[in-house]
Amino acid sequence: IEFIRSVYYNKLEFTRFSSSVGKFVGFTEYGVRNAAAWNNDPSKLSAMKAQKEVYCLNHVPGYYRAA
Image (cartoon, rainbow, N blue to C red):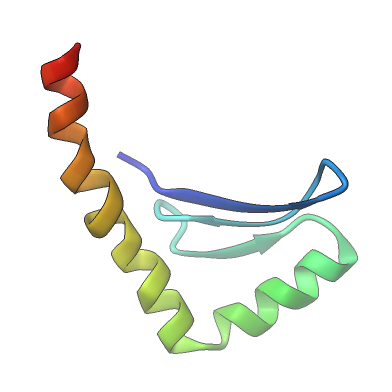
């Protein structure tokens, strides 16, 4: 299971957090600057890493039962 949070503006993805990578990745100049700032904030990184357990792992069993 992988948690991904992407940030878009005008249908263009400029930043993404992936739980498998464990950090933010920027795709535009603005996104790279934001990703660098967010990656230097340990509380932001730990909060995003915790989202996998909070959101994904708690909801997956319900989806499997429904299928």
